Image (tube, rainbow over all chains, first blue to last red):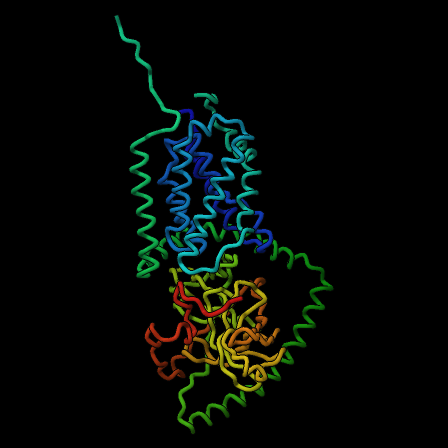
Length: 160
Length: 316
């Protein structure tokens, strides 16, 4: 199990992704800011499930909750659910070509947004707006490049 | 005959028992956290710890923006600086003059209030807080300020900018404080129309340029006019009175409803804030503020954030 991405690489990527998520942007631009940390989580759950799993997703989601002032546990639950599904369908997802991964990732990211908004709705925030699926769409388009970039240092042969 | 053993049989869709258990435990934990915080508001310590852990990251995020602003100032042309300096000096002169008048008025006001034996604290102390992070989506207008309870910041503390009221603190960590803006959909602020003293609530709409005044009956429509200044009324004892808040931008008779559609534009540029003033009451001056109303009282009539889940009439 020595060929996988190092802890440093995983932690560093997650940190940078979280920073990109929390970047202060004007509202119209924020719509085009994909959920970076979630995508990085999905990537590592696919390539290094022995290191990144539901517990990592929970921890990262909790940090996001604290940073964004949402109910503690809201992003944590959504990220945990997404990573759970990723791990469940891992074999299938991992070996599909990048253009088949796009709709799968779109589904996962959109599911995440919907879950967060649903929890928002339960706790009395105004109803959601279809525009808020925009980051998921942008994320799905960015996905192939992101996963390629993150795979850069993964020294395992692709079918190990 | 040795049996041929397959090295490892992995089903295409993992039916991994440990994963399921782990997921169930963690999902329950997340649900538990949410219920705890939503129902009982008991997670302040955890939130403080997470906020403190995140501070370096958030500081790092705003650093490039702050540095850019700094170098922008450093490289600003001499001419621009001279012009700005002149403008500021003129403004200072103007403000000084106004302040003198104000000081006299304040002294007179205090004498009169003493005569009336009325208990209104009216001198405040302020601390400048810089914004470290902001979170703006239509559901939340929150900012993170670089002062925390080490500096004496407390929950419910009002935030103002030079132009007008900004918001109030909802959570304090050791070195940072989180505040919601007056435009946050869960914020309601007791205000008064400066011209005639009409009291009402200004509720956030989730848009920077807009506050709603949902409680003005159609019959009272003549009392508000476009352009009227709204100031804090000081009711509830949370916001000091007399700070400018917003200007009425729209007044419309709404035939189908008991209340008129009245909108106002906040005076501060809430999406362009760099620094805010955290207002403290001066203890030497302040007479005891009545304790906050019991929580069952009309939601947020005292300037507290609305209880979550409470809807304040039509927010159309």
